[in-house]
Length: 515
Image 1 (cartoon, rainbow, N blue to C red):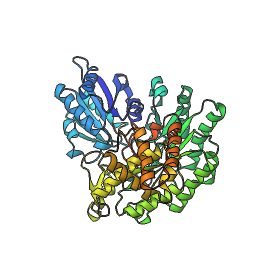
Image 2 (cartoon, rainbow, N blue to C red; image 1 turned 135 degrees about the vertical axis):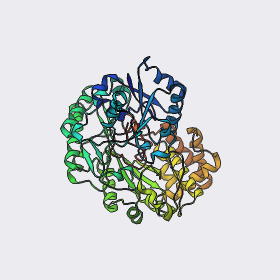
Image 3 (tube, rainbow, N blue to C red; image 1 turned 90 degrees about the horizontal axis):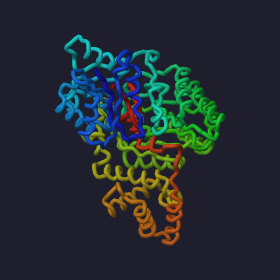
Image 4 (cartoon, rainbow, N blue to C red; image 1 turned 120 degrees about the vertical axis):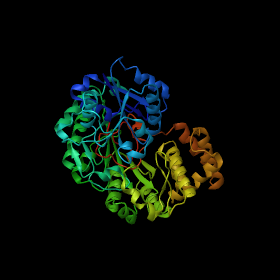
């Protein structure tokens, strides 16, 4: 008998923490359990062949798939082909995408069993029942949430190759006390910490084996300041012991909660060692109240400004377009306010309707229309029509290409001037009219287009513009913050719910793992 734990990661550099949690908690079944990770875009039949290579004649093969918003379509194809050529293989699904609205999904119809929610103890229990009875089993199993002390930590299951070549995801806690309705963590009752001393001992082990990049998937790193300071001190001690071999840590931070004790610790980190992701989402108080988001906007803005001016932390700050009741005009005001604070990157996200999230309650009143296919992006609402929403989607893509890439560091202030949102929207509309594309635009062509827009549309001196573009392009001003910037890109707006964590670096709307 063999048990396989499998998922399709967004890219090879993302190592699945969720699968490793399951493997760590398999108990006596661990010896028969293997990991087999794939990458999105792999050929379906090749993946099926690889999975079946683990099958031993006359023995049962159980395959557990982690299903997420970014891999559900390809995983559905994979399960369909697997069950077609090997119907005797037992397929167990888990993850956020199959934890809610389960009955209507094609992948659920194809599978034998589904685990919703936490999978740490439920997946091995289901495997034991499949192997030893009692039979028959019900198809849907609600995951049991064990006490945190009973969950075995998985960090020794990162291989030497993982440590050398991949992003290591870690978590000091699960859950979130906040109730933002676009987020699966709105369903959490609170946040649950792991024992901090045990967790740091595991981090010590990873560091001793050569790990230097640590990406925390905790929803609210600075919720418990005492714990935050302990974790930060761990990294500061490593930096002091060997500044020539620095560690790099990424945390998700609540923007309006930055007491002096935390600021003192943050100021000690040298450049290139600390990155924060801060979710503003909206500066509109009415929208915040509507979606149950509690945030002191003035305090959040003050803290972002402080971090930019008094720390070396690299800041990713998130905004969401398409929230119920948010107009383009109010979103533009928030965008301009955020840009004035000068964070290193503004992550411009478009609202997505994750399965199970309470945002759906606003559908009728605010005319929310979502794409029925993953990632369930909003298409229109009663304040932003479809055509305008498409313009915002293109804005977000071009913003990544021009602003967040760092390739136009000197030119960007010229583009944005005194009204960043409005000027960049003009550029975005013009770029799309000229290219009819938002992807696969060569850097040389993009640079030439930006120069043309500044000279012909904004009526700026062509020679000066060309010189400025050349200074950016020649210098390749791509601001690489930390060892693997790709590990922190592509995020959007929603936090992890309480089940086992992310397999890759998706949007916070998408992250969590059940099986």
